[in-house]
Image (cartoon, rainbow, N blue to C red):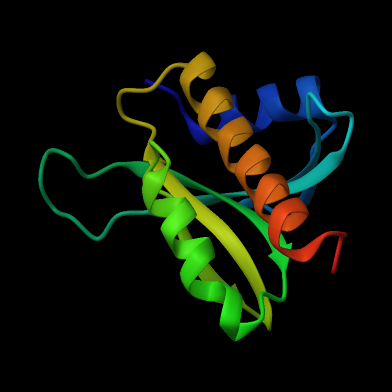
Length: 134
């Protein structure tokens, strides 16, 4: 089990995370292709009153503005990936978003998930937009 404070400490140490507020961090993830991709990490609280009442972290990474004619191919690509990420529109920018529970997760696991989101956003950006559109 991880706590939000542990997550913040790891991200500050490994990635020089910038705190946007107490529940939101931003990192610049260096990808294997030597590109940088912004990833935001946000603390989410569940509304549940069950024993699973815990905190979640949400990763999201901006892609850019995806033209309407490319939305279906992007969504098809996302459906082929082995993650539960979703495409969302946030302040006019398309982002990949994914959440994980802190209840039963290791540091290695959430770092892996975060890197997947960053790499996927970068791949979509490169394949469908060609350049950084942010």
